[in-house]
Image (cartoon, rainbow, N blue to C red; front, side, top):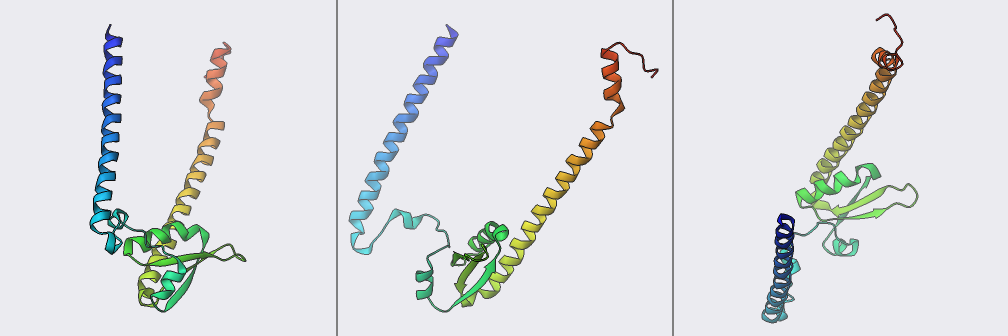
Length: 166
């Protein structure tokens, strides 16, 4: 009896959620149609209201002015991208086929910001590596302690009813 009531409530809640999602998608489509009609001459899009990523194509970056480049190792890439996005720097990345590292292109007026971002990215990635090494060392240390643990032998001996004199 109670299970049936709970099941009914769950099914009803699911139906309500699906209905709300469908209604929202219809309203979103209507909003998008409204704005596209209202601003069709100005190339308006709702996606322009969303926060943008600062990584853009190289040709678009080249059109905006003088470019500088900096080499970024693969291990520092993720942190480097986060720092550049945080600072609002427009950049473009290309993979160097020979070294498998990346080259970051950016506008010349952002040189100091990019250098600081790269330093922070390298520091963060090095800190992560150091953290990983220390965890591995701790695991090895505890494995060795577990192997040398005399209580384990005493527990096995008690299970076998052997007196170790302890």
